[in-house]
Image 1 (cartoon, rainbow, N blue to C red):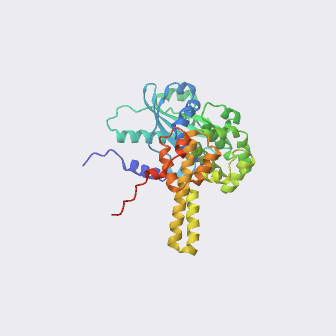
Image 2: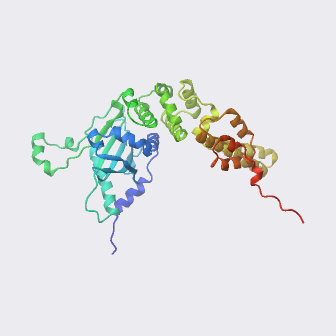
Image 3: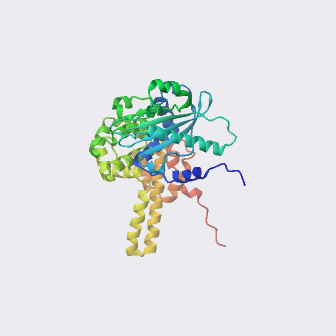
Amino acid sequence: MGQRTKTPETKRSRKARRKLAHTPHNGLFLFTFGNLEHARPALAELLPPRVAKLVDLSTLTVANGHFVDPDLAHSESDLLFNAQIAGRPGLIYVLFEHMSAPEHFFVLRLLGYLHSIWQDLLASTPNTTKLPVIIPLVLHHGPSGWTSAVRLEELLDIDEESLAEVADYVPRFGMAMQDISGADDEELMNRAMTALGRVTLLLFRHAQRASSLDDLVKRLARYAKLVRDVARASNGMRAIAAVLRYIQSVTKQSDREVRMAMQQHEVLLIDEETYWDIRSPGWREDRAREEGLEQGRELGLEQGLEQGLEKGREQGLRSILMKQIAARFDKVPAKVRARVAAATVPELEQMSISILRAQTIAEVLNTDPGKTKRQPRRSR
């Protein structure tokens, strides 16, 4: 019989992890803190100072695997990181707990998650003789605050004097707890984290407290400059899209209502088309296809669909080119927008190639698409 390095339980748990529920909290948590740009400063702030000084955050990487019980995926999200801790390979396990009220035996379940991580490590590297240190960090944002145990010893039915006598023979385990609900807004905003990291914590803090969409956006409006800093950062539009999806999901309001609330409270001043470019990339192409199908009723289904697809492709090229220009040259003058809007498909294609090497916007726009076209063969 061949050697087994993975137990049936490990295989079952891994299969179950792939089915974790995608809740609004889960999505924004993973988008923000699953990105090392935001994770590094966040961990430096959220870990206890005496622990943070032992962690070399320059070595931080995201590890594979989620260890939350699939039955609790609606109320918990997790991330596992590799890092050098005190000069040796270690792990940081971040668990975002978003139950409305904390579970009494939560710390015991957390210990089970760490046990699963070690079990997976032993299954994948059977020659391991030492277990890496795992630092558990828990984020909580329930409205009542964290009221349950933070150390396993608190759950043991024994007095302190007797516990000291048996301490060598019972598990001693605790977690680093960050109760977001217990912090005030100014404290969160003054943390040395990225703009998106702070906005994420602010939204988590108020998500279950806000009575309505208007209430949540009004709270966010106090820090409108920070939201705009998110938009201006690298991959800012993707980050804003994640924020908008979160607000729409937790408030259960329509996209239009979210956009109107953000404009009304001057959190994000964007027109409708820009909003949809952020919120639903590809919407122009989808709308063009729908228009093509509509035309198909008059021109014939096949011809209309073909026209719709071509129009969608053209709109897609135009939209992507504008984003490339904005990312490369920051400001996009009105005359540049007009030039791109009037460009033909061949011109758009050539501009998309030229921007890869161009040093100025003029080099992108002054492109002759005819130069790249193959000359027609002369008839004999």
